[in-house]
Amino acid sequence: MFHETVTHAGGDTRGTASESHALMLMRRALNRGYAMEATPEGGAVIRWTRIDLTTRAHADRSILLVPELPVDGLDDSVRALLDLIDLGDATYDCHADRRVITAAGTEIPPGDTARLRARHLVRVDRHNRVRLTMSARLGLLAHGHRQAGGKTDGFAMCSCGLTTHAPDGQTADAKLRGHRQTMTARFIDSISATYAAALTASR
Image (cartoon, rainbow, N blue to C red):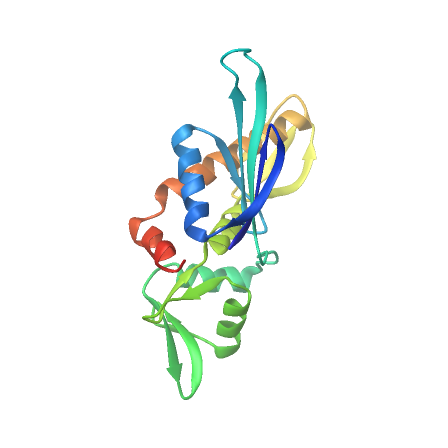
C-alpha cells in the first residue's frame, strides 16, 4: 500500500493506493510520456506539465507514491536475497516447524524470512507463492541508479557506472535524473502480465 499525493491546480489531494493502482498510474504515465522516477524508499514520483489550450498557460502536476513502510536500508545481504526471490518460483514453506522462503533451490533462513516479511519486502499468496512487493522492486531500482561519489567540475556518476559530464553540476544532475527516469520507464514497461495479475489478486 502507498500513500498517494496528487498535486494539481487546487493544491494537494491525499489518499492511498494499492500496489495494482500504483502500477496502473505508472503504466499510464509511461503511455503518456510523463517523467517518472523510482525513489529510494520504494515509491515513485510522476511529473508532467498541463497546458491550458485556451490560455496556453503551463501548470506543473505530479503524483507522489510513498510506501506505508519505506524500504530504506537495502544492504548487500538483503538485496542478494531479494534478487534470489525475484528469479521466480519462490515459495513459503515449513521445514522442521520453521517458516522459510525457498527460492532457486536455496532455503532462506527463518530469521531472514521473518525480516523480509516484516519489512513488507515480500508478499505470500494463498498458494504460498512468494513475490517481491512493488515497493521492494522500486527500492531496488532506485538503489541501482543512485548518485555515486561526489560531483567535480560537472561530472556526476550513477551507481550503475554511467558517468555524465556537463558544463556545471546542476546540468550533470539533470542528466543523471533523466537517466533514472529512463530506467524507471524501462522497468515499468518490463513488468510481466503474471506479476501484474499477482498484484491485482492481492488487493
